[in-house]
View (cartoon, rainbow, N blue to C red):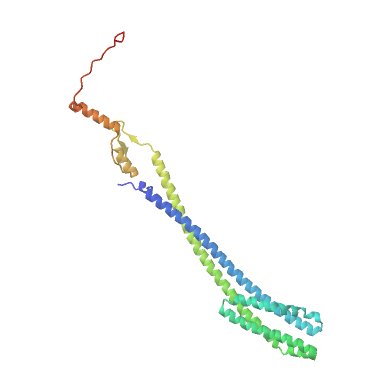
Length: 291
C-alpha cells in the first residue's frame, strides 16, 4: 500500500497550503477593512440622524421661545419680554434651512417638512399680527386675537408634523442599526470560519511536520553485509525503502571509482584487452667519473 504521508509534505501540497494560508490572511484583512468601513458608514448614518433630530428639536424650541415672548409681552407690556421672540426670529430661518438640508434626501420627509415651513410662516405671521395689533389697538384686542386659538392650532399642527418626521427618522435609525447588526454578524461568522480554517490548517501542518521530523530522526536497521534496510518486517533495498517511506523516485548512474574498479576487474579476467606490452629498456648506470 502506498504511503500517503510523504505526499502531504510534497512541494505542490506545501505550495497549495501556503497559498491557501496567504489567501485566508488576505481575506481576513479585507474583511477587517470592510467591517471598519461598515462600522464607519453606520456611525455616520447614526450621527446624521441624531443631528437631524437635534436640529428639529432646536427649531421647535425656537418656535416655543417666540410664542413665550409673545405671551409675556402681551401680559406685562414690557419690551424686555420680547427678547426670546427677537432671538427666535434670528434663529428660525437658519434652523429651517438646516433641517431642510437634512431631509432633502428623502422625498417623503422633504414633502412633510415643506408643510412644516408653511406652518412656521403662519405661526410667525400670527405672532407678528398679535404684537402689531397691541401697538395699534391695545392689549385687549391683541389678547382677543390670541384667544381665537388660531396660533395654538398652528403650533399643534407644527408639533404633529415634526413628530411624524421625527418618528420616521427614528424608524430609519432602527432599520439601519438592524441592517448593520446583521452585516456585522455575517462578517463575524465569516471571520470566525476563516480563522477556524487557518487554525485547523496550522494544526494539521504542524502535526505533519512534527511527524515527519520524528520519522527522519528515527534510526533504521541496515544489514551490514547486503546493505538492505529492514522496513515493515521485510528486508528491502535502500531505494525501495526511500520510495515507500518518503515517496522518492531514483535514477541510477555509476561513480568514477566504481567504473575504474569494474575496468580493472575486466582486465584481470581478460588480459588480452590490455594490448601488447613494451619491453623494458636497459638502465644505463653512470660511472664514478661520469663517463
